[in-house]
Image (cartoon, rainbow, N blue to C red):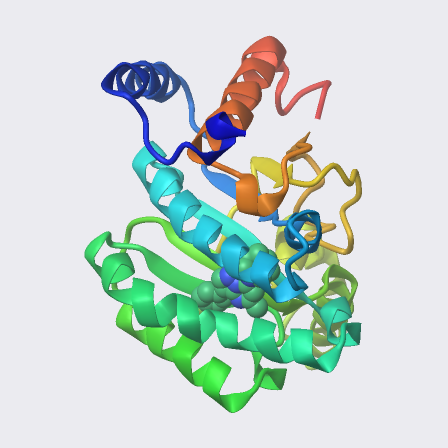
Length: 264
Ligand code: V07
């Protein structure tokens, strides 16, 4: 129990962590890491707290992991913050979730600007409450020219509807003669998705022990390394991120030259 509650590291522990990071930095880092941040409700339940307390703690973890990802030189961090399915939750919980982007940004935007982080979103954000949209649009605008870590929030996102929208848009472009049937291939189709400007994730992490994709980036995850962890999202720490990145590095070393050939 005491160990769990420890909030700081001794200088020896810090040195060990720094060595571990140096080792990691000596090998290829996944450029795009996507995370399904699961287990917030369960974290709260274990403590007899309301579910929203878990979401709030989860938001604090987002800040911590953004800093850690930036430190590692990860180029894009995509976080599944709100799915199209999440509207089915009780109204009080949805209302609380919709306030989290504002809360997060009111305390953290100056640091994001300072750290050269660029905020972006994917999903239908027009359906979010006006105040949430306003805060998110403001953050996107303020970080527009930053060229460091891309912090990409999936908000009101669902992968199947993303694919259907892409097909509708593509078939309309076909009818208009903007593209020809012969032009349609993986790359062409990818340009119609919400991730058109991003490379596909190299590593997907899902916390909380569920081994499912839950309608998240189905097209983009075709060749991604998947890493499922038992830890609940509010308990997810920099060490857990390092563990996932180390596992990614071991797997890519093992496949060696095969990536892009037989294995895929
Ligand atoms: C949300 C906290 C993390 C765990 C998962 C669910 C709850 C950060 C944001 C956010 C979104 C956009 C933005 C800045 C911050 C957020 C929602 C939920 C809806 F520009 N955390 N977080 N948004 N949770």
